[in-house]
Length: 629
Image (cartoon, rainbow, N blue to C red; front, side, top):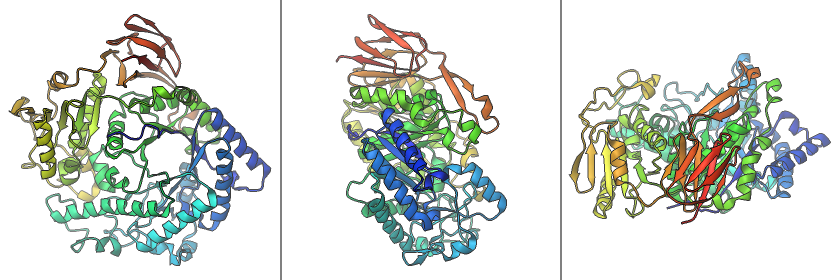
């Protein structure tokens, strides 16, 4: 299954600053017009709001904010650009000290971190209820949840009053602003496993939630109650997003921030699941934090999200941050290798000193070259990638076992495999279900699938019976594996540091039955040769060392995987800011098994065709080859 081909986005962050709220000032209107023109000139088709992020903290000023959003929306619509609002539905800043206020105003400047005093917050009401009555409760303290990284408290998505109030706000937001879409943020349990223990969350359980000091329950994957508790939190997110969807107009574009499910610990700790998000969201989001100018460093995260796009037939918008045209272009090209859309947000908009921000290009000029090329050549991006094989991601292992819940467990083996396949030029698709047609996917690799449901095993049997080949490796039996952290569960050190070194089986492939091969080693030495022997043979062969490769029906996309970077020296010690990125350790020639009729270098450099070879010149980062079937 594939997401709708015509749902592509070229999105840019539209940042709101304090002075933008000076409505009536002609300078504000002129600034909106100039920015809208720059977005149009950059071929952006979507603008997404940053700023006024913790929306409930702006409750007294909603009329002013909505008026501003309405003006921005109208100006953009005249230029055929959609406006998405982007705000936190659940988090509120609550400062306890002067130091917290100053730190937040510096490090969270992109939130416009406004917050009421404790006295005012205690009296704030909306929809007939006190906002403070909606707060998540911490099972350890019995008091409101505190999230130190944001100096924040969080509202509980299971509180019926909060659900009704937020739905009422969304109706008001859409009617008063004319926005075209919504990024509903912070749809996870930010504080971790002990949240939430309010009466509404407890009511959804079929047992009495144990005291936080009870080691027989908390973090014990051998206790069915623990599984029910974790599942309840995930289900709560999907249920809340169904409420959000119902409050919006039919088919209204909706997405929620998601930092990928390719990490077992993060998914369990915060109850994040794309499989729950899609109960309300009709767009899948992926946030990539930091500037990651390496073609393979985010491959697994992107592949996981692309797999969800295929399963649920949803488009994906990837938000990434950058400070130069190189970092913006790389983000765009990396996303398109997997057929995903880009939302570029300039790094200068995230709490950098003003003197540094003036040295950086604005978001529109940084991404303009990439977006203009995409707009001018839609045929190069309208087809979906074709894959040599598939990698099966086991959500059951991730959620149902301690091994799957640690970053050093099953999900680490998945991430390593995806990166290695990309580096070896093997195009692998992440799947959550066994393919229906082995002709299109003759080989499925299963990394460290510790447990499977009866339904999953039946699907595996059908795939094998229809002629598919399965290469399963790593542990496949939970017996002998720990079921809980060896040390204090609450410290969370186990998430990234739990060792499974005791598991050291022989590295040997055996065919258990026709088509089903198994090697108990977590990193089999001959895995790549086994995959090559069983993957598709009908796709174009591409020889391009140093490049990640993506193949479509009529085009081949390549992206350099390693770079020499220069940094903005003036930024130190504010943050590492990439100024330029020059590809290194890349082939100078590309050889293809199919005739290439045209070659493009969208981000600079050049190339020419000589027979079956493409000669690269001036060190291009990104190359697209057109070929005829």
